[in-house]
Length: 84
Image (tube, rainbow, N blue to C red; front, side, top):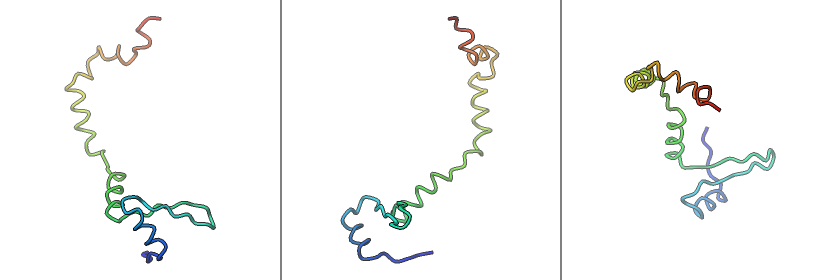
């Protein structure tokens, strides 16, 4: 759904061109943030990044770095082995 800006909203945007515009619904007291579409798209892409396709590479890298070394078990239980 697309709606048009009111004159009041347009003036508010023009008065702070590099800042998002906060709009309050007086009926619900909910605050909304009006941003340029290009900013919204950038934020959406950051929030929807799916890194699961990198998990295999992450595990492979960790194993090559020695994380599967039995000595790492001591590190994993550091608090138990450090002595009080």
